[in-house]
Image (cartoon, rainbow, N blue to C red):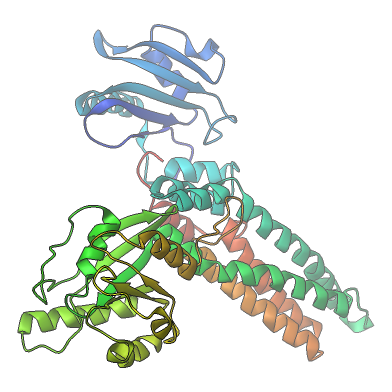
Length: 454
């Protein structure tokens, strides 16, 4: 891949809009735009300025535009960058892009602007990945987590960990160079203390992925219960719209119905399912099978009970089966407008319990608070570091396992060469997260997931 080319791409979504932004980056960006922008000599203008005028070439006026001028290294890619804000006509956008392609510009690959920024040292790989997360964020919590990573909070923590580890690894390596002289440069107790300190930092990061992944991708929340318990009514009440068909006829919901709901800045992926019961209806039976499949994939289960019909002992066996899945479950006692349940009897079953009337909206505020408490996302900090990226989680997990091996080696008084090898692995795993250690295949995989123009 040639990163000396001047590249071009549409930086705004395809389609008709008020404006479109075309981005160029590279050594020829300013010169080529200057050739077709007779209003001003861009080469003589101050950087970080805007200029209004026309794009024209060989007597043809392409559009009236605003030029944003950035000169490297003070630009997104640390190269010369021009952004052309033109009218949102796809024809105009394509014509302007083609004009510069004819001058020698190359169409940018997916994520190539951000990849150049990474390769030119604007930020590390973890921060580069956060750019895509910021673009894709669809809730307050996901945005907060992505922005924290983009600002370098996560990278700073990793850099500090790696720096401390490098110091001791170098001392161990030095010992190996003087192996025949039986010298010890790295105090084993100090190294053990350091490894324990690093593990105290790495383990919480690894543990944070469960919540971080939920924030990034949404919390899979499956609504289950017997037929006619009010599952669809609850879905409609949360979404504040008639999303699901509600009927007094048991078994109305034959298939799963999905929608998204944002609570406290967290996105929940709600799934309304077919009622759990034995049935001879072939279609309903398939719906029940799908319900059971959804339950196994859930991150939280909302078990809705019709308290006008059921008692705790009626569903105890079903709840015990679900408890074996080790998935957080909330007992939602519905229809309290028809019958007041004995809350203590239901709470004795060992699950968080809330009484509601989905039909009339009674108790929903308590339900929402309990839901946030159960999934553990009600205290998401705007500044705390949380792992949201699967690649980062896997590398941190490998780092944790390797550091634990170092600790075991120290306690067993193993030789320095074995300890040094584990330290190298730990440094490698940490380095892969920030891009201190990378390869072309890794970068292609990461940046290939970006949109064109970013």
